Each structure stands twice: as structure tokens, then as C-alpha cells.
Figure 1 (cartoon, rainbow, N blue to C red):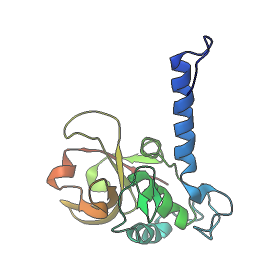
Figure 2 (cartoon, rainbow, N blue to C red):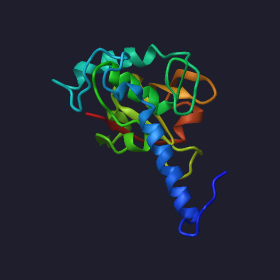
Figure 3 (cartoon, one colour):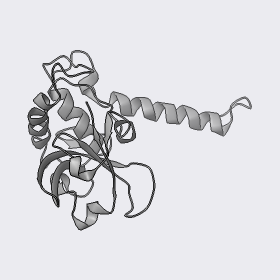
Figure 4 (tube, one colour):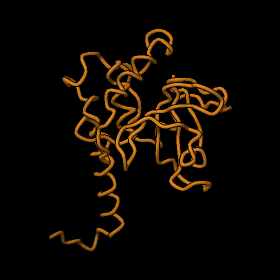
Length: 182
């Protein structure tokens, strides 16, 4: 049992717990640990050459997780969450990206128009359709088939890693923005 001295407030305890949770989440992406066997490539903060050279490999790496169950904080084939999928797919091609979806939403350059979305872009969602809120979900665009069919791969909390259409009834009203990471 934890006994708080008068010098520690519950707010201080909350801050310590929050810091511990943040550190555990960041360290959950084992691909960032030196010597990880998950990838043989050295991770880089910037692509060597045009980002478009990496897109097909990133999509292939993400698709390898298809069917993997959802697990909050997960980052491997036993269970993975949406931001872990992004982090892991990019690490497999040697690129380092943020681990948490709200950090990923601030990474790279925002794509101003939906018509300009390309494979490899990240798309972000809020939890409730039509409402403002914090970014809670991310996916990687895998294909732009038409004006009304933009496919993306993500870790669905109910169905695991799968591809869906940005314009499906469920996702089109939750869409917040797209970002080109590099």
C-alpha cells in the first residue's frame, strides 16, 4: 500500500503515474531499442532519397499485420494498436516515426485537400462522428482508387488490422486530416 506523506499531494502522485504510463508507452515500440531483432535496418529520422521510394515497402510491411488482433499499446503480431502499426511498418523499412497517434498527427506536412491524398499518407480520426476532439486513430493510405475510394490500413479496435475505405459510412464523418509524413 502506498502511503502519501504530507509533502506529496494526490496531484503529484497523478503526475508520477502519468509519467510512468508515458514512458511505458514510448518504450513499447521495441523497434526503437538498439539491437532489436525486429528489424535489421538501422532506423533513420529521414529517408535516404525520396519518400515515394519507401511507400510500397511501408504498405507491404503494414499489410503483413493484416488479421493481427487489436491490443492497446501493442506493437507486434500478438496484438497491435493503430499507432503501433504505423510505428512498426515504418521501422521495418528503416524509418523512425513517433509512436503515439496525436504525435503522429503533428509529424510531417498536412495534406490540404482530400483529392491530394496519396498512398503512404497518414489519415486521422476522432472518436465520435461529426464532433471535434482529440485525434484517437490513425491509418496508412494504401491505395487511391477513385474520388470516393481511398483505402487505408489500420488496427481496428473491434476487427484487428484491416483495410477500409475513407469514404465508408463509419469513417467519412470521423475523418480529421491527412498528413504526408516526409
